[in-house]
Image 1 (cartoon, one colour):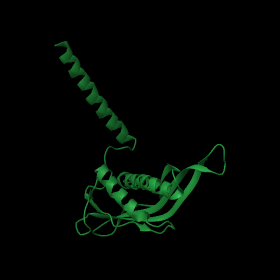
Image 2 (cartoon, rainbow, N blue to C red):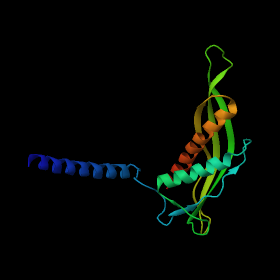
Image 3 (cartoon, rainbow, N blue to C red):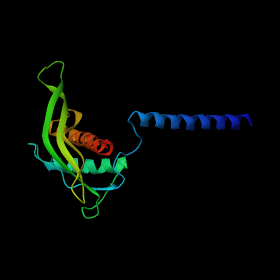
Image 4 (cartoon, helix red, strand yellow):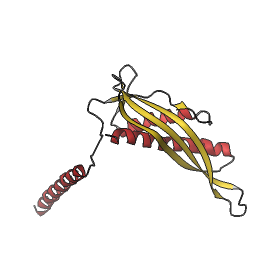
Length: 176
């Protein structure tokens, strides 16, 4: 009997704390869940446009954005004809920077950081009005040099694309 009473008290305290936390967060400008307008439920994601000098970034980045939207759950992926909104992403820059070197040879790189910079605009499908946009958003990842630089890029690119996707999706669903 005593354990049952304790369980009910703990449940009550937990619910009160959760309600207080939500009220406190709301009054400070924080909200739980998506900040999208209620009429925006679906999004069309065309292939990312790549204006960087690094070829083939668009495939990994487009896939990462779609996966991040699905993981987040605030929006559903839809065809262009059935979507409430559309996301246009343009990769503007790609950089790979050495960040760690061999102790014995200061000119031999052991680790690189890959940066992918992009811009995006999310618009309503019916009238083209802007839901969220950013002229600059970036994703990055660190990768070790295993083999040659090409292999390091292949390993690090999906990670940087995933980080960029996470930053884009967060910007869209938390923008409002």
